[in-house]
Image 1 (cartoon, rainbow, N blue to C red):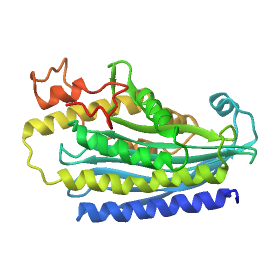
Image 2: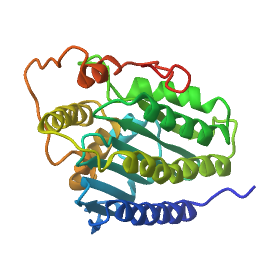
Image 3: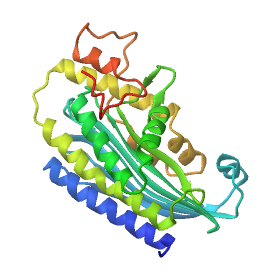
Image 4: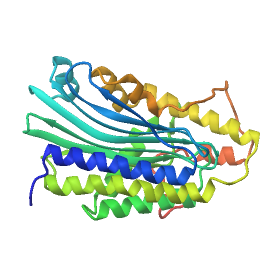
Length: 304
């Protein structure tokens, strides 16, 4: 097997961004991505930030970046690794839909390399429905289970638990959504080659568009009322809380001098907070809150 080079990984990530943007424009039908090319003020590299504000996607971002620089003392402490120079590249996506019955979705695939002797992959996909629909959660998890199984039959259970633990608002004692998979630092300690791990990460990235397309097409034209919009914005507030308080990627980007506008593109255009909100008994909103828990077996349990 040929070990993929940094240049090859960067090229694959760029192509993935292009493919996903084309697919999302077709889904929205009206909106087109606006591209913002940027370069690092210090170090090297830059990226392509692409934002869409369309008819059905209220705000979405599909970012590609490749940055490099000297490994500072602060970065060494964060990574718990020593080195002289690093490269970091990846694609990240967050979509905030107009229709409250279309879920928020997040995807990230990334690669980190330091002095060519230390490298790893990371990423994942997770779903944050405003209204939890068990069948849709099961579809997501079955799709991700298949993507994992082709590389390692143990990956899905491991990475599902990792997502449950990671996408968790401990100050609220609730998960951000119905989870998905999350993984980080898949590198030399893995029983798989660099090529196999690269294929796995690209498989995860390429599964994004089919997953989101189905969830979008099932829900984008559903009728909704003002109370649904109110709930959508309330749940978006939880998304903001997680990204600003707990998300390590946000913190890493800001602490390493990343581009703030690109890092914070994940935040919705509008969000809402309401003091001590309590949904009605037996409502769709109450059902959603009751299922923001770790450890739900969405594929086999499929709670009702």
